[in-house]
Image 1 (cartoon, rainbow, N blue to C red):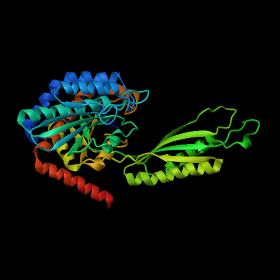
Image 2 (cartoon, rainbow, N blue to C red; image 1 turned 45 degrees about the horizontal axis):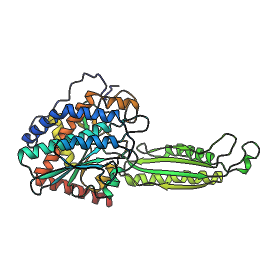
Image 3 (cartoon, rainbow, N blue to C red; image 1 turned 90 degrees about the vertical axis):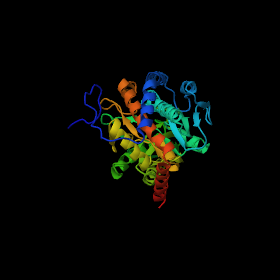
Image 4 (cartoon, rainbow, N blue to C red; image 1 turned 30 degrees about the vertical axis):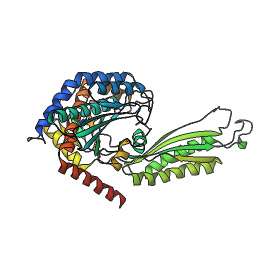
Length: 421
């Protein structure tokens, strides 16, 4: 079997590019020149973020270095914007015009650092915004760019919190990207999975585990039984669905029947509707375990994370630029089996969130220490800049082509109506 994934040290040539011009080659020329000139500074910024991993809503170092970086390049910034570690940087040229939104993520993962490549996501947002600003200045293009530093993607729904506080108001579209394993020099327009988070608390009764265990209600048994039941349930769920979780307890000891256990579960599926349906089946496992062990159970459901809706008009434009200038497009890789809080944003406004491949070792994909290393390489940096150039070109079409923007918004409304039917 041929390994199609981009591996470190691969000498495979870039995919053959399509012939023909992209929309406004003069704009793309400015974008490429701007990002190429910024490359050393962006690389330094990325490595700084990589060396200072911070968990969700604790991204204080990232907040400071990002805002300092964009302030030096002429953006008006607002620090601690609506959330402590969020920030916003804006650039306006002329009067009126469309508004381009861009996201930069910042948070890392417990114990394994930037194993989801948020250092690359962060600098991609900066690169897109800086390139758009340069094109607007040099060509006299009216409009506005809003670069939003978004904390807490890893389990914190940071973008949802910012949306609820009005951070996305005024944006016509919003763009960002995400690294992942995939074919060499590829950009992915795959979707992602919807997500429901569950917290489950079993409450039992302690007893002496040797002297009188029959007097207890074992909350650890409840957790084990629920865990096992879900393992059996997976056989009857679709292969596109994911159910995964952990459990823990407080003050456990082998000679005491545990009176407490807490489980944290994620349920995922390709659509929000499917996720909610599967969640009900998972909840039945918790309820059955409580009955079987005589424990009480409290199930707390977090906010729903929607699947990623790639705007087809924005996606087609990105595909045109990538295929003619940078590489190939795929629809299978990216973060297809993961989840993102940008999915919720894509339900609420027109958005595009492509994945882009970086070299990774076997079994070293996202959320592994090996991917933290992968996100630090020069090859990953260069791949990040390629997709940033393509996204900046898409963003500039939003700012300069009224017919194109109308089609983008029409496609968003059509997708929304289809979901509601």
